[in-house]
Length: 253
Image (cartoon, rainbow, N blue to C red):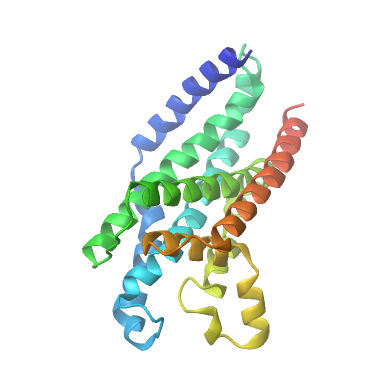
């Protein structure tokens, strides 16, 4: 059964990746907005923002990586919506393949596409002066957090992708997720924010994720932020997966 599921998922993943390879503008478009934010904040606002860091791009990059993921998952919902409207799911259900493999192929496609966009953003950051002393383990830890966060948001994207009534409705859910990093430590230290805003910023998931990535890049001792970040990512992933699985079973039953 497991072998059957893995084989079917691999075949369907190849199908989805071929579609993306024929439309590379999807990945480029996903990376453009975060890169534009990075250019704007570094070269326009960076001189006026006091972060205590020698290089603002070093401070900013973790938040930009989070925004890259938040903007990229809207395409997951979009692709799912198109497959639902085109009857692809019904067609696959008439074939001898594992039911869940169709959904997992979309999720893994999202992971591959988002990781590619993240690499593009990091390369641009390097050209802008981003530097880190993080070693192999540090980069692996950064990659692990970003993968977990991508999977968590992707499973959230599955729900509107399966239930939306229009293309705009399928992708609109990502707007609040893109906005969330602006009320966090992604762009400025939370200590500079007024009381209620600071309280929200310090207790929402993006702040702990950004702080954990920043500590890893700067080789700071790992503190509670990384465990809080992992707890947020893991918790969101589990809850989102359960809701997505229930929604999927109802839609195809």
